[in-house]
Amino acid sequence: MTEKIPHAYVIGYPVKHSRSPQIHRYWLEFYGLAGSYDLAELEPEQLGPFINFLRQAENAGANVTIPYKQTVISHLDAIDEDAQNVGAVNTIYKEAGKLLGTNTDVYGFLTHLSQSVPEWHDDVEEVVIIGAGGAARAVLLSMKKANKINVHIANRTIGKAQNLANEIYARAKPIELSKLNTVLGSADLVINTTSLGMTGQPPLRFDVAVLPGHTIVADIVYSPLKTKLLQQAEDRGLRTVDGLGMLLHQAVRGFELWFGVRPQVTGELRQMVEKSLVSAS
Ligand code: ATR
Image (cartoon, rainbow, N blue to C red; front, side, top):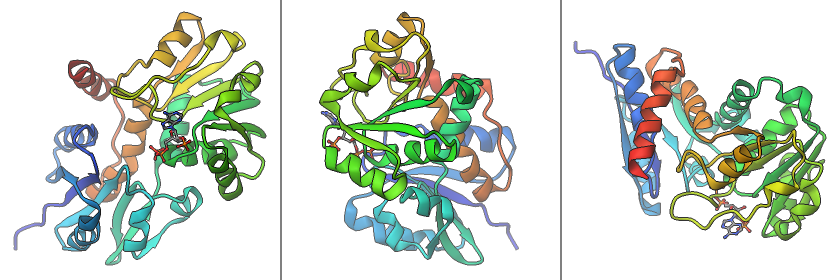
């Protein structure tokens, strides 16, 4: 009998920009494992059929990215507590013949934040999250898990920020994006979770000068690696946290579930992905 080679995918639309294949293929080679990891760019009507395709024995699972992190849930057999709490799935895997969904973004964000600024927990009381979309959900839950009590959600559409607070963390206070400056003056940690500042998107309008000198500035955008927000924060001497680390750390659990080895996020892996981001920009 020939041994089955597990296949995994990243599904989304668009998905060609994704760095996930590079990360998982690096680990497959590094650990000498048989397996594959490919892009699957899906139109909305292809999502259901593709999830059924994942049920075939040779397929181990998938990562899920924009815009399917929430819509994919109805196609799965069950989702675990992490995915329920975030209200979104970024990783699909199999257990006892069932197709299950989890969410590793909270782990990815908190692990990278702790590695980038080890003292962050002691230094942070006031948090400002910019944005109230899919990525903001995981970041808000991260702050709840870390017992941060003073959290503001600044969003263009205030109703969405209110909904996010209602669903995930009732203590969080919504604020209109246009009034961002009123909360920045006392912010210890600011996190951009919108796509503003990403290559091809408008910049995030942000006055770094308003921030106190000890503020930590994080951006979940990783293309470009150093967004204008991070560059301005760095120029002011503030501590910064980039978006690439979250991507690398969220990938760990998926690889472990599909291929059976818990991989390391090494400097070599990071440099490889950084290089490809620089050459693409
Ligand atoms: P994702 O799943 O990647 O988080 P999303 O759910 O579409 O994407 O959320 C995008 C976030 O960026 C939202 O907070 C959105 O604000 P609205 O809720 O008001 O739509 C924010 N965003 C996107 N483009 C923006 C813009 N030009 N100005 C201000 N905010 C913007």
